[in-house]
Length: 65
Image (cartoon, rainbow, N blue to C red):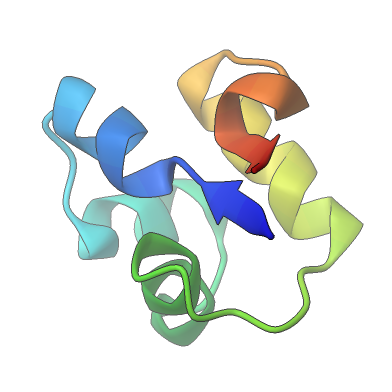
């Protein structure tokens, strides 16, 4: 199972879903699915944008549990 730590990162940076969508250009739906850990697949470009926004590596965003 792959865990997504977007909710934690957003909390640490005091960001809302709308903030992340606006800053990255990703759709609210994409951000919401990752936030709720219900996404079935994720585009590599989306992961790249999130890593850039939070200045983190992919291992800090996703975890194989």
